[in-house]
Length: 451
Image (tube, rainbow, N blue to C red; front, top):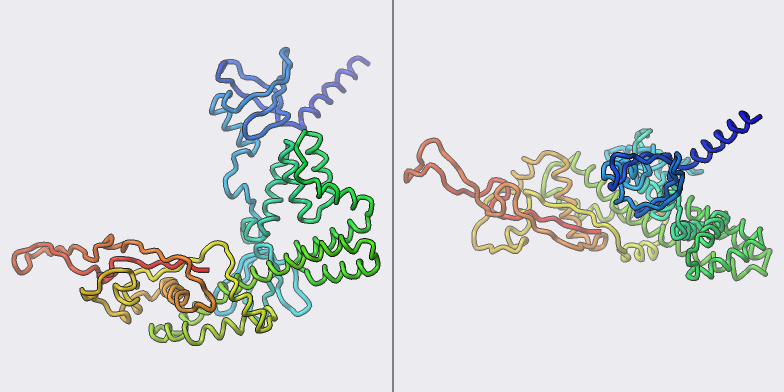
């Protein structure tokens, strides 16, 4: 009997320790005597350690109290020092290849009733007609932020980190509340209170959760509506669901109206983001298509300023089912966010000679634009040139936020390069300066940041 109890106690202690991280490390004050036990809790500054053996005790240590080698190893095992890829996570997504070139990465959700591929990209569900898709590649390694919205990516990162302190539980609860996970949010709010976190700033949310707890049916309706709106992009269906519920239960009209306003704001933001995402996607794709079938510089310039705007306008209005007023409002609202960059590269000299880069024009710049264009036969070099050209000449679609001038990669910004001859030239010189064969004396490469 005594032996059985001993075995059970040992199994219980192993199971208890198994829920925590068993570790061994050396302290700076006593590097010759490693400590062994389990870590019950940890954060970026400290950790709580329960030691095995005769000196069984629990204490809080700082990471700098450990030998650096052991501290770094333990932090990696606890995933406190993750690289950027590990923080975001990697998914197995899909890549749609389009007829005529170009592709789009995301997570293929399903086919809709109109025969479109529904691809989740940065929290948006984008429909792509099957007639435009050449093939689908799977699996493709993608970062989470390429598939999910910033809010969903942040939630997944917090979930992997497993909040431990009261502040971390409070932060996680706020994210879950915003996304409609009310039951899980309540659990983490309770945990934050138990750990002594200050919840005075979220008093209104706690009151709302308490009210929703009394009305389980309302809580379920709000959760389904937020799930449809945030995760599946079905904003109209969510609004219709809320309208029907408000008509049947007028006593909850005020709560439903607040949620309807929130979903309308989310819908407007999703449509704006989708519009600008499609705008840049179609812009790049149409330029690439043109360059595959035409190699003349003048034709390319005429296409970008003449035919391309009509193609983009028609494609955006058709694919997103926009009226003239909706299109105009979305086109005028450029919003914020990361910039798209393109540059003229070695072809910067073509743009108004030196005047376009702030240099004097009294000296002639050599170089023939047509010969430069023919020499750079790669589609990528020409594509960047045309994208920068169009960004500066299509104010209806693009806002040029900044223009950056960088020294020519060949001459370093002198506009001249050394020429060395084996035989002496006229005047007995073996080396002399000549116009740079890359920038033709323009000195600078013009880069354009636009949105």
